[in-house]
Structure formats: structure tokens, C-alpha cells
Length: 487
Image (tube, rainbow, N blue to C red):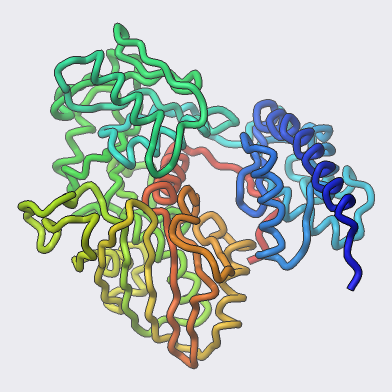
């Protein structure tokens, strides 16, 4: 078998690095000047390193079976900067594969056809939203990751502005601010903050990558008047989990400057539990209190949705293998919940989960068809849901995986469902994954009408990205997604 000379392989790598380096400012220009967000099979190219861009190109081979390099995509990105494009999310990876399949040619002519909806539309209003103030009420694990995502997405037509965080007073304000900033700057799971952070003690602000964030100290929502800080018509994202019903969350709506409240936990009563990508169409302009459901519900509902659409689900069981959370104890101590008082880093803890029942709030057609349990395990992040299902139609592992792979790359659910087909991946490989859930193809079992699926999910970061998608939706931030999905 013939093999490329080592010098040629090394030179190819350097040539690809050089092209990726040239691509970065073009991607930045499209983002800042055209509000065009470029992706590669759903993975953002904006603000990424050269190596990350090269790795994402290699990812295409795993999901499409087609080699794609920056040699293929660079001419397209370069041509995009010359077409006066209007706002959109453009998947350069899919365009690159289609361009290769056509045999290449005139990149501009190809893009004029594929991106006809936004060519020469730079000055067009690509979404009908107005800038929306966002307040994070609570600054724990989810609050700080939401802050990272919102700061990262600031600009580029996103329109969401993180204006403030609300925390309880801790005595020495200067010391407290420094500690809050430090927790945002350094994270044991997700690594260092990508940028710069500074503190203004007198103004009580934290500035992250130029975003000035007011720190408000309050013991309850009733203590806050947001208009004092120039905040109006804001969405308050409640990360505390203290209040989960309309009466409790309604306290936020009594504050001056607040228009809506979004809970980052399952809501109780008549509060709509939204899994973005599935039932966000249920959101009305009149809705002032919403829930983003739970991380597990977000992980499993998209997969269950596409399975039910294609095969039908008769009944099933969901077993969640979940990373431990701040709700548990480091060492054995009193806890009001069963078993959760035992040391989280030393034990697997069998506990209850409402995720299976919560599925029906997003997918009513699955009401009463699922049961569920959870095992908390000694890892700090990334969890797994095991879906043990009886289907209405017969299938096998190969057909099932192929269907889920297609759903992950070319359907309306590509932001929610990711797909991996590797015998070597483990939980830490999915830290920072922005999808709601990731199907592990190598673990899929299917025989007749019985199927077992393993779905990984970053219960912190992936979930936070789903929350931000809801924020965008209720703020009327909508982008065209091109090329159009075929599924």
C-alpha cells in the first residue's frame, strides 16, 4: 500500500495551519460586520484556535464519512466575505461537503445559489429583536456558566446583554467581589475564562471582555429595583432553585425593570417546562414565567422525540447516571433527601429523578410511558442517560444509529442531538459540549422492537446552552440557518 512521504504529510499540516490562521480574521469579520455566525456541522468557528478549527474539520469524517479540510472550506469563507451577506448562521462544513460533491468550481457562484436568501442583504434586519437585558439571580454553577456563554455570544446580532447578577451579601464587599470574579475566572471543570476579567469595587461591577456586569446584593427579589441600575424590561434567570412555582417566581415580576422570569430547574404547577428545539413553539408573548426544565430532561427529550417520530415508543425506562451536584454532601452529614446525605465523592448514590415524568410536559404523547431512576456517581460533571425502550417498529443497531446520525447533522434537532462513534470516549471527553445530549453509537443495542441507547450530556454546559437558546427565543432573536436542513 502506497504511503505519503513523511515530509509531505508534515508540509500538508503546516499548509493547513496557515490556511486556518488566514481563516480566523475572515470568520471574525463575518461575525462582527455581517452578523454571520459560521459553524462546522454545528460547531462554532468563531473565536476558535487554529488547532480547534483543524480538529473540527476532522470531525466531519466521523459524521459524514467524507474528508473535509481547510483547503475545501477556506475558498468558501473567503468568498462569503465578498458577498455582502445578511445575518444568518451558516454551516461552512455542510457547504464544503456539497461543494466537493459538485466537483468544486466557482465558489462565489455556488454560494450565491446556496445562500441566496442572504446574499446582498448585509443591511437587512435579519431578526426582529431588540436588545434584551438579562439578569442572573444566583451565581452558582449554572449562573457562572450562563455568564460565560452570554459574554462569549455578546455581539454578532445576539442582542442579549448580561447586565447584572444578584447574590446574597457576604459582609466585606471588596473581598466578596474578588471571590465572585475569581470563580468566574477559574473553573475546576471547565477551565479558565476565555478572556479578561476586572473588578470595580466602588461601582460594584465585574467587567468580563468589556461587558460591565452589575453585582447586586439582595436577600430576596423584593429588595431589588433594577431601574436604579438602568436595567429595564429584563429577563431574570433564577438559578437558585429556591422558588419553582408561580407564587415564588412571581416575586421577580414585582420588581421594577423586570418583564419575565426563567427558571433553570423544573417548574411546578402550570409553569411551562420548555426543552428548546422541542416545545419552544408553546411559548407565547404573554408568558412571563417559564422553566427550562432539567438537564436530564433536555438531554433525553430530543432523542425520544426523533425515536418516537420514526419508530414509535410503546414504553420504556430511563436510568440516569448523574454527576454529583452541590446539593449533596462532601462527607456524610444530615440531608433531608433519602441517601443524599452520604458522601458524594465516595459513593454511588441511588436516588429519585423526575426526568421521566417530566418528559410528558414537553412530549405529551409519551405521558405515562416512561419510568425513571437516577444514580449519582463520584464525578463532578457530565452525566449519562440510558434509554431502555420497547419500540412499535422493529429495527437493528446499524439502522438505528444511522437514523440518529442523520438527525444529529441534518435535521431541526442538530443543536440538541450530537453523535459520537468511538470505542474510546469517556465522560470527560464531553465537558463543554454544547448539545443537550450526545448519542454514543458504539453502545447502542437494538434487536427487533427492543432498543437500549446511551446518551451522554454535559449537565452544566450543554444545559446552559439550552437555557440561552430559550433566552434568545423569548427575546425574538432568530437567525436563518443555512444551508436549510433536509430532515
